[in-house]
Image 1 (tube, protein in one colour):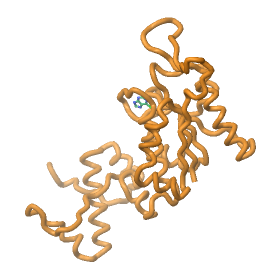
Image 2 (spheres, helix red, strand yellow):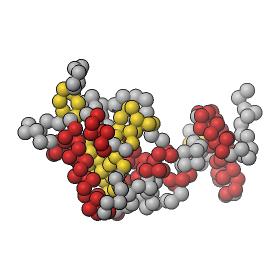
Image 3 (cartoon, protein in one colour):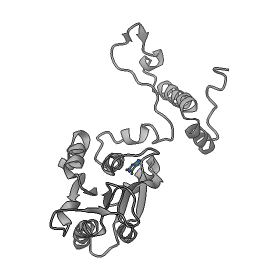
Image 4 (cartoon, protein in one colour):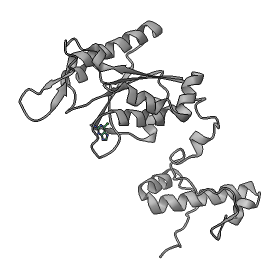
Length: 250
Ligand code: 6GU
């Protein structure tokens, strides 16, 4: 069970996206919970403003410390009442300046009971509140988005599918791409021939050992060709595995 709390100016965007399909059903069963907290509900500004100009000048507006802190406090206090004063929950600030998200981080975060995501907008958030509440700064890749909502949704999806009970087939979280450090092998369904293309014979053989060996070989070939960086890591961690495909394409 992981409880996800998302601090955002666009709660409907986040809830719409995350209460769909597999995660929606998982939330319905209680395997995860996802709440969005509207930062604007916590502003003390009488016009409902949450942003202001930056000291020092320059283009763009900044989210102010007060509404962000009070939104955070409302969640942290509720968690504190539930758990007692165990320890501070992790607060993940989505920012292009953060550490790049990866499967290993997802696995680590899936062990937490409570996760708070802070989504920034405009030019960012007043540094002083970040210093007080943020435990992790995370980016989802080297490109710039308009806000932290999509990155938060990406992270929640990647983490939630690792929570026990969320995926029905216990295996599926593990056997897929990156679960074993390799890209996935190609897959086929009916019919046996489509557009003159035949399903590989080994998959029709019923020999599970042969099928597994073929799939591993395909994963290795694909990873070597498409993601040499992942392939190198895999080789280092599995030095005993037979080299695949070194004879091809040269
Ligand atoms: Cl976490 N935020 C924004 N605004 N852009 C991003 C990002 C995060 N990760 C990649 N691009």
